[in-house]
Amino acid sequence: MSEHVTVPKAELHCHIEGAAAPSLVARLADHYQIDVSAIIDGNGKYVWSDFTSFLETYDLASNVFKTPADYSLLSETYFRMLAAEGAIYGEVFISPDHAQSAGLSYASYVEGLAAGIERAKIDTGIEGRMIAIGVRHFGAAAVERVAREVIANPHPMVTGFGLAGDERDGHPANFARAFRMAGEAGLGLTAHAGEFGGPDSITAALDFLQVKRLGHGVRAIEEKDLIRRLVDEKIVLETCPGSNIALGVYSVLRFHPVNILRQEGVRITLNSDDPPFFGTTLGREYSSVSKTFGLSEADQIAITRTALEAAFCDEAARNRLMVRLDSAVTPAV
Ligand SMILES: [Zn+2]
Image 1 (cartoon, protein in one colour):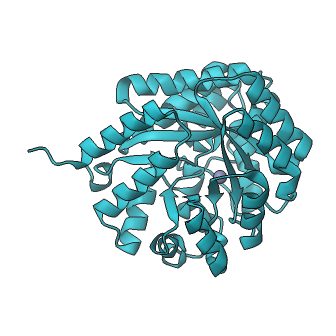
Image 2 (cartoon, rainbow, N blue to C red):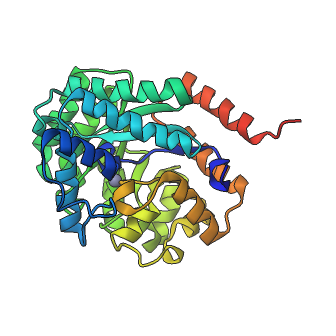
Protein backbone atom coordinates (compact mmCIF):
# COMPACT_ATOMS: atom_id res chain seq x y z
CA MET A 1 0.00 0.00 0.00
CA SER A 2 1.46 3.37 -0.93
CA GLU A 3 2.20 5.83 1.84
CA HIS A 4 -0.61 8.30 1.17
CA VAL A 5 -3.35 5.66 1.44
CA THR A 6 -2.67 5.09 5.13
CA VAL A 7 -4.00 8.42 6.39
CA PRO A 8 -7.81 8.39 6.59
CA LYS A 9 -9.12 11.21 4.45
CA ALA A 10 -12.32 13.18 3.99
CA GLU A 11 -13.38 15.47 1.18
CA LEU A 12 -15.82 18.39 1.36
CA HIS A 13 -15.33 20.09 -2.02
CA CYS A 14 -15.65 18.23 -5.30
CA HIS A 15 -18.02 18.90 -8.19
CA ILE A 16 -19.44 15.54 -9.25
CA GLU A 17 -19.54 16.37 -12.98
CA GLY A 18 -15.95 17.61 -12.60
CA ALA A 19 -14.93 14.29 -11.08
CA ALA A 20 -15.74 12.31 -14.24
CA ALA A 21 -12.71 10.37 -15.42
CA PRO A 22 -11.97 10.90 -19.15
CA SER A 23 -12.22 7.11 -19.67
CA LEU A 24 -15.78 7.11 -18.32
CA VAL A 25 -16.73 10.14 -20.43
CA ALA A 26 -15.24 8.46 -23.53
CA ARG A 27 -17.20 5.27 -22.82
CA LEU A 28 -20.55 7.08 -22.50
CA ALA A 29 -19.74 9.33 -25.47
CA ASP A 30 -19.20 6.22 -27.54
CA HIS A 31 -22.54 4.84 -26.36
CA TYR A 32 -24.40 8.05 -27.26
CA GLN A 33 -22.31 8.67 -30.40
CA ILE A 34 -21.07 12.03 -29.15
CA ASP A 35 -17.74 13.25 -30.51
CA VAL A 36 -15.40 14.07 -27.59
CA SER A 37 -12.13 13.96 -29.56
CA ALA A 38 -11.74 17.74 -29.14
CA ILE A 39 -11.70 17.50 -25.32
CA ILE A 40 -9.88 14.19 -24.64
CA ASP A 41 -6.40 13.73 -26.11
CA GLY A 42 -4.65 10.56 -27.29
CA ASN A 43 -3.29 9.96 -23.78
CA GLY A 44 -6.78 9.95 -22.31
CA LYS A 45 -6.42 13.39 -20.69
CA TYR A 46 -8.75 16.38 -20.84
CA VAL A 47 -7.63 19.17 -23.17
CA TRP A 48 -7.94 22.79 -22.06
CA SER A 49 -5.61 25.78 -21.89
CA ASP A 50 -7.27 28.62 -19.97
CA PHE A 51 -10.30 29.22 -17.75
CA THR A 52 -12.66 29.72 -20.71
CA SER A 53 -11.60 26.52 -22.48
CA PHE A 54 -11.67 24.67 -19.14
CA LEU A 55 -15.35 25.61 -18.77
CA GLU A 56 -16.07 24.55 -22.37
CA THR A 57 -14.36 21.19 -21.89
CA TYR A 58 -16.16 20.73 -18.56
CA ASP A 59 -19.57 21.40 -20.14
CA LEU A 60 -18.94 19.08 -23.08
CA ALA A 61 -17.78 16.28 -20.78
CA SER A 62 -20.84 16.78 -18.54
CA ASN A 63 -23.11 16.42 -21.56
CA VAL A 64 -22.51 12.67 -21.87
CA PHE A 65 -24.39 12.05 -18.59
CA LYS A 66 -28.02 11.78 -19.53
CA THR A 67 -29.90 9.21 -17.45
CA PRO A 68 -30.11 8.39 -13.71
CA ALA A 69 -28.06 5.24 -14.50
CA ASP A 70 -25.30 7.38 -16.07
CA TYR A 71 -25.19 9.53 -12.94
CA SER A 72 -25.10 6.53 -10.63
CA LEU A 73 -22.18 5.14 -12.62
CA LEU A 74 -20.47 8.52 -12.23
CA SER A 75 -20.91 8.73 -8.45
CA GLU A 76 -20.14 5.05 -7.86
CA THR A 77 -16.91 5.32 -9.86
CA TYR A 78 -15.86 8.45 -8.00
CA PHE A 79 -16.64 7.22 -4.49
CA ARG A 80 -14.88 3.90 -5.15
CA MET A 81 -11.82 5.83 -6.26
CA LEU A 82 -11.96 8.05 -3.16
CA ALA A 83 -12.22 4.98 -0.92
CA ALA A 84 -9.26 3.37 -2.70
CA GLU A 85 -7.20 6.40 -1.65
CA GLY A 86 -8.15 5.99 1.98
CA ALA A 87 -11.14 8.36 2.12
CA ILE A 88 -13.83 7.48 4.66
CA TYR A 89 -16.14 10.37 3.78
CA GLY A 90 -16.92 12.49 0.75
CA GLU A 91 -19.31 15.30 -0.09
CA VAL A 92 -19.95 16.19 -3.69
CA PHE A 93 -21.51 19.27 -5.22
CA ILE A 94 -24.40 18.40 -7.46
CA SER A 95 -25.80 20.77 -10.02
CA PRO A 96 -29.58 20.76 -10.57
CA ASP A 97 -28.97 23.12 -13.50
CA HIS A 98 -26.85 20.45 -15.21
CA ALA A 99 -29.61 17.89 -14.64
CA GLN A 100 -32.13 20.24 -16.15
CA SER A 101 -30.03 20.72 -19.29
CA ALA A 102 -29.73 16.92 -19.54
CA GLY A 103 -33.56 16.79 -19.49
CA LEU A 104 -33.68 15.08 -16.09
CA SER A 105 -35.89 15.98 -13.16
CA TYR A 106 -34.09 17.02 -9.99
CA ALA A 107 -35.51 14.01 -8.13
CA SER A 108 -34.30 11.43 -10.66
CA TYR A 109 -30.85 13.10 -10.89
CA VAL A 110 -30.52 12.82 -7.09
CA GLU A 111 -31.83 9.25 -7.03
CA GLY A 112 -29.27 8.22 -9.65
CA LEU A 113 -26.37 9.82 -7.80
CA ALA A 114 -27.53 8.44 -4.43
CA ALA A 115 -27.75 4.90 -5.80
CA GLY A 116 -24.14 5.07 -7.00
CA ILE A 117 -22.89 6.43 -3.65
CA GLU A 118 -24.78 3.67 -1.82
CA ARG A 119 -23.28 0.97 -4.06
CA ALA A 120 -19.79 2.27 -3.38
CA LYS A 121 -20.55 2.30 0.35
CA ILE A 122 -21.64 -1.35 0.43
CA ASP A 123 -18.24 -2.51 -0.81
CA THR A 124 -15.92 0.08 0.71
CA GLY A 125 -17.69 1.59 3.73
CA ILE A 126 -17.23 5.13 2.41
CA GLU A 127 -19.94 7.52 3.54
CA GLY A 128 -21.23 10.17 1.12
CA ARG A 129 -23.47 13.24 1.05
CA MET A 130 -24.47 15.76 -1.61
CA ILE A 131 -24.56 19.55 -1.65
CA ALA A 132 -26.87 21.13 -4.22
CA ILE A 133 -25.36 24.21 -5.78
CA GLY A 134 -26.78 27.26 -7.44
CA VAL A 135 -24.76 28.85 -10.21
CA ARG A 136 -23.92 32.42 -9.37
CA HIS A 137 -23.69 33.78 -12.91
CA PHE A 138 -27.19 32.45 -13.69
CA GLY A 139 -28.51 35.10 -11.28
CA ALA A 140 -30.44 35.28 -8.02
CA ALA A 141 -33.73 33.95 -9.41
CA ALA A 142 -32.05 30.79 -10.73
CA VAL A 143 -30.26 30.19 -7.43
CA GLU A 144 -33.53 30.62 -5.51
CA ARG A 145 -35.18 28.17 -7.88
CA VAL A 146 -32.54 25.58 -6.96
CA ALA A 147 -33.08 26.25 -3.25
CA ARG A 148 -36.83 25.79 -3.63
CA GLU A 149 -36.40 22.58 -5.62
CA VAL A 150 -34.08 21.08 -3.02
CA ILE A 151 -36.40 22.02 -0.17
CA ALA A 152 -39.48 20.68 -2.00
CA ASN A 153 -37.77 17.34 -2.75
CA PRO A 154 -35.94 16.43 0.45
CA HIS A 155 -33.49 13.54 0.20
CA PRO A 156 -31.54 12.15 3.18
CA MET A 157 -28.27 12.36 1.29
CA VAL A 158 -28.71 15.95 0.07
CA THR A 159 -27.64 17.79 3.20
CA GLY A 160 -26.16 21.03 1.96
CA PHE A 161 -26.70 24.04 -0.25
CA GLY A 162 -23.97 26.05 -1.93
CA LEU A 163 -23.03 28.69 -4.44
CA ALA A 164 -20.58 28.09 -7.29
CA GLY A 165 -19.92 29.65 -10.69
CA ASP A 166 -18.04 32.82 -11.51
CA GLU A 167 -17.46 34.49 -8.15
CA ARG A 168 -16.78 37.87 -9.77
CA ASP A 169 -20.37 37.87 -10.98
CA GLY A 170 -23.14 39.10 -8.66
CA HIS A 171 -22.80 40.37 -5.08
CA PRO A 172 -23.50 37.81 -2.32
CA ALA A 173 -26.33 40.04 -1.10
CA ASN A 174 -28.27 38.93 -4.19
CA PHE A 175 -28.28 35.36 -2.88
CA ALA A 176 -29.07 36.09 0.77
CA ARG A 177 -32.70 35.02 0.42
CA ALA A 178 -31.85 31.67 -1.20
CA PHE A 179 -29.37 30.95 1.59
CA ARG A 180 -31.83 31.99 4.28
CA MET A 181 -34.42 29.58 2.86
CA ALA A 182 -31.90 26.74 2.62
CA GLY A 183 -30.59 27.39 6.14
CA GLU A 184 -34.10 27.43 7.60
CA ALA A 185 -34.73 24.08 5.90
CA GLY A 186 -31.79 22.64 7.85
CA LEU A 187 -29.28 22.44 5.02
CA GLY A 188 -25.59 23.09 5.66
CA LEU A 189 -24.35 26.20 3.86
CA THR A 190 -21.18 26.86 1.89
CA ALA A 191 -20.17 29.29 -0.84
CA HIS A 192 -17.24 29.69 -3.19
CA ALA A 193 -15.35 32.88 -2.29
CA GLY A 194 -11.77 34.09 -2.15
CA GLU A 195 -10.57 32.04 -5.12
CA PHE A 196 -10.57 34.53 -7.99
CA GLY A 197 -12.22 37.19 -5.85
CA GLY A 198 -10.16 38.96 -3.20
CA PRO A 199 -10.72 39.29 0.57
CA ASP A 200 -13.84 41.44 0.01
CA SER A 201 -15.58 38.48 -1.63
CA ILE A 202 -14.97 36.46 1.54
CA THR A 203 -16.21 39.16 3.87
CA ALA A 204 -19.36 39.58 1.78
CA ALA A 205 -20.06 35.82 1.73
CA LEU A 206 -19.72 35.67 5.53
CA ASP A 207 -21.87 38.78 6.04
CA PHE A 208 -24.71 37.94 3.66
CA LEU A 209 -24.84 34.14 3.34
CA GLN A 210 -24.44 32.97 6.97
CA VAL A 211 -21.91 30.32 5.88
CA LYS A 212 -19.60 28.52 8.28
CA ARG A 213 -17.67 26.97 5.39
CA LEU A 214 -16.11 28.61 2.36
CA GLY A 215 -15.11 27.06 -0.95
CA HIS A 216 -11.42 28.04 -1.31
CA GLY A 217 -11.30 31.22 0.82
CA VAL A 218 -7.52 31.22 0.49
CA ARG A 219 -7.23 34.84 -0.55
CA ALA A 220 -8.03 35.73 3.06
CA ILE A 221 -4.24 35.61 3.30
CA GLU A 222 -4.20 39.13 1.82
CA GLU A 223 -5.88 40.72 4.86
CA LYS A 224 -4.76 40.18 8.43
CA ASP A 225 -8.07 41.20 10.04
CA LEU A 226 -9.92 38.73 7.87
CA ILE A 227 -7.62 35.88 8.91
CA ARG A 228 -8.43 36.81 12.52
CA ARG A 229 -12.15 36.75 11.74
CA LEU A 230 -11.90 33.29 10.16
CA VAL A 231 -10.12 32.02 13.27
CA ASP A 232 -12.53 33.72 15.71
CA GLU A 233 -15.65 32.53 13.89
CA LYS A 234 -14.21 29.03 13.36
CA ILE A 235 -14.84 29.22 9.61
CA VAL A 236 -13.69 26.11 7.74
CA LEU A 237 -11.94 26.58 4.41
CA GLU A 238 -12.43 23.94 1.72
CA THR A 239 -9.02 24.56 0.15
CA CYS A 240 -8.17 23.04 -3.25
CA PRO A 241 -4.47 23.79 -3.80
CA GLY A 242 -4.05 21.69 -6.97
CA SER A 243 -7.04 23.42 -8.55
CA ASN A 244 -5.61 26.85 -7.66
CA ILE A 245 -2.27 25.96 -9.28
CA ALA A 246 -3.94 24.53 -12.41
CA LEU A 247 -6.04 27.68 -12.85
CA GLY A 248 -3.12 30.01 -12.14
CA VAL A 249 -4.36 31.55 -8.87
CA TYR A 250 -0.88 30.69 -7.51
CA SER A 251 2.13 29.78 -9.62
CA VAL A 252 3.48 26.83 -7.64
CA LEU A 253 2.42 24.94 -4.53
CA ARG A 254 5.14 26.35 -2.27
CA PHE A 255 3.68 29.85 -2.82
CA HIS A 256 0.15 28.65 -1.95
CA PRO A 257 -1.09 30.09 1.39
CA VAL A 258 -2.71 26.88 2.70
CA ASN A 259 0.00 26.18 5.23
CA ILE A 260 0.36 29.78 6.46
CA LEU A 261 -3.40 29.89 7.02
CA ARG A 262 -3.16 26.59 8.91
CA GLN A 263 -0.34 27.91 11.08
CA GLU A 264 -2.37 31.08 11.78
CA GLY A 265 -5.07 28.84 13.24
CA VAL A 266 -7.55 28.84 10.35
CA ARG A 267 -9.46 25.55 10.08
CA ILE A 268 -8.48 24.13 6.70
CA THR A 269 -9.41 21.00 4.77
CA LEU A 270 -7.90 19.53 1.58
CA ASN A 271 -9.99 18.88 -1.52
CA SER A 272 -9.68 18.04 -5.20
CA ASP A 273 -12.40 20.32 -6.75
CA ASP A 274 -12.50 18.89 -10.34
CA PRO A 275 -9.80 16.22 -10.00
CA PRO A 276 -9.15 14.80 -13.50
CA PHE A 277 -9.34 18.27 -15.05
CA PHE A 278 -6.60 19.48 -12.72
CA GLY A 279 -4.48 16.32 -12.83
CA THR A 280 -5.14 15.65 -9.16
CA THR A 281 -6.93 13.39 -6.69
CA LEU A 282 -7.73 13.77 -3.00
CA GLY A 283 -4.79 11.48 -2.18
CA ARG A 284 -2.45 13.61 -4.25
CA GLU A 285 -3.65 16.77 -2.50
CA TYR A 286 -2.82 15.24 0.89
CA SER A 287 0.56 13.95 -0.26
CA SER A 288 1.71 17.00 -2.26
CA VAL A 289 0.73 19.48 0.46
CA SER A 290 2.33 17.28 3.12
CA LYS A 291 5.57 16.92 1.19
CA THR A 292 5.81 20.60 0.24
CA PHE A 293 5.09 21.95 3.72
CA GLY A 294 6.45 19.11 5.82
CA LEU A 295 3.14 18.01 7.38
CA SER A 296 3.34 14.99 9.65
CA GLU A 297 0.85 12.14 9.64
CA ALA A 298 -0.69 13.68 12.78
CA ASP A 299 -1.12 17.00 10.92
CA GLN A 300 -2.89 15.19 8.09
CA ILE A 301 -5.16 13.36 10.51
CA ALA A 302 -6.01 16.70 12.14
CA ILE A 303 -7.05 18.00 8.70
CA THR A 304 -9.35 15.00 8.23
CA ARG A 305 -10.77 15.59 11.72
CA THR A 306 -11.56 19.22 10.79
CA ALA A 307 -13.37 17.98 7.67
CA LEU A 308 -15.45 15.51 9.68
CA GLU A 309 -16.29 18.18 12.28
CA ALA A 310 -17.49 20.48 9.48
CA ALA A 311 -19.22 17.75 7.43
CA PHE A 312 -22.86 18.28 6.52
CA CYS A 313 -23.99 14.97 8.00
CA ASP A 314 -26.10 13.90 10.96
CA GLU A 315 -24.46 13.46 14.35
CA ALA A 316 -24.81 9.66 14.31
CA ALA A 317 -22.87 9.45 11.05
CA ARG A 318 -20.28 11.94 12.34
CA ASN A 319 -19.74 9.86 15.47
CA ARG A 320 -19.30 6.68 13.40
CA LEU A 321 -16.77 8.44 11.18
CA MET A 322 -14.85 9.80 14.18
CA VAL A 323 -14.65 6.25 15.57
CA ARG A 324 -13.31 5.06 12.22
CA LEU A 325 -10.75 7.87 12.17
CA ASP A 326 -9.63 7.14 15.74
CA SER A 327 -9.42 3.39 15.20
CA ALA A 328 -7.44 3.86 12.00
CA VAL A 329 -4.86 5.99 13.78
CA THR A 330 -4.56 3.93 16.97
CA PRO A 331 -1.85 1.39 16.34
CA ALA A 332 -2.95 -2.19 16.89
CA VAL A 333 -1.37 -3.69 20.01
ZN1 LIG B 1 -15.27 24.36 -6.61
